[in-house]
Image 1 (cartoon, rainbow, N blue to C red):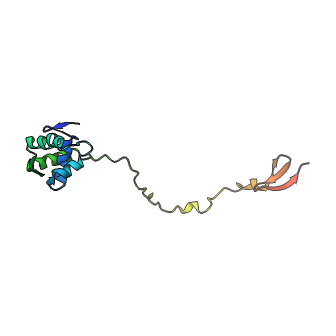
Image 2 (tube, rainbow, N blue to C red):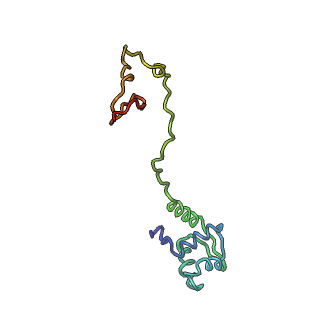
Image 3 (spheres, rainbow, N blue to C red):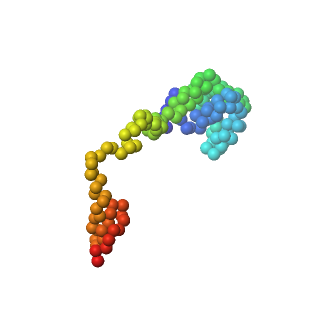
Length: 146
């Protein structure tokens, strides 16, 4: 916790002042005491720890039954909220949408077989020996060498 203009952030006085400003600047002492009830049990403790601390610093004006926030008190709460505002976190690397590959013109030469020299496909006429079988290209068995 840090000290700022004499009030310890998170203390009963600090929390009461923030609550008072959030309620519109005016609240009864009883409603603030109820808000701080687990920490502050008695009216005397509330008067010493909250009302007196805030009045001395000029953050509130106390009447018999209520507290009213001064402009300095409202400015103090605004500064605290601004200081404690979450800082935006940098975004992680997010995958960008995939862009289509730019198209290329159609290569018509791939659609038709390329011209070949005479006799280049004669190998298809003669069977190969696989194991004890003669096989033509295309896996057609021609003869058995048994």
